[in-house]
Length: 83
Image 1 (cartoon, rainbow, N blue to C red):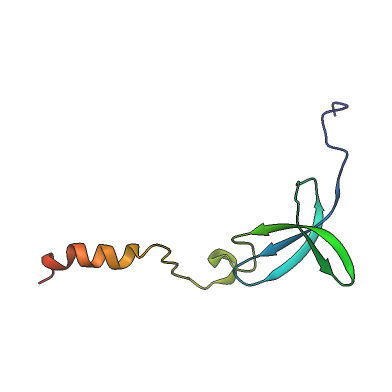
Image 2: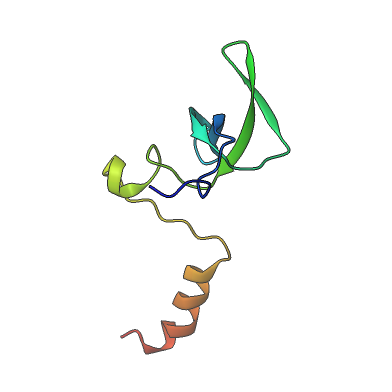
């Protein structure tokens, strides 16, 4: 293994899934400005949109996220072709 190419600043970081508020700790070098308290200790916080606790592949549940009304827009656009 080459010397001097791997980061040295590994530390425990809290990752929070914002869709279900699940928090898990792991070692990381990710930079962050926010912190969170977990089990009485303060850790740097990295916010995630999706993780293993909310991803449909791992949960087996399909979720439909319509963030900008795209589904309604599509249905309205093609409603004239409906028989």
